[in-house]
Image (tube, rainbow, N blue to C red):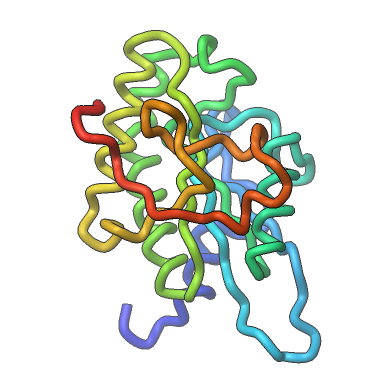
Length: 196
């Protein structure tokens, strides 16, 4: 990607709005412009959040989790928020995820998340693990653990993931359940030994 502006490429692959499949069952990315830099004093800076699975947010509607992530991204100096997930299937409860559909969309989703995370880093942004404690049926949790291991193990992403804190089992905390000042406490994140 020599000579390519990483922010422009990021926004080409994850344009402002949402990237959903034709039946709107899977959401692969969601991007919001969250700040303007009118005086040119700071560079455009993307902040990528990786959650567990998408809920109700879409091209125009923000859900509670997304609103919290937008606030954190602004506090971190972000001008764009890019939202991706370990699993791409939209469900308000992980127990409702259809394993056959999750498996069908898995490779496409992990490939896109890897590309967007790498572009975010090249554009001077941050990549934040924010998926919380794995939930859902055993096969869904196993698929999410596979995605977690793949994404945190990619050579260009190793050591680059951050989080707002860890659960007792070493999972990245979910933004919805954190205080508003959590953005001040970003720490590095790696997959706990023996997970997945």
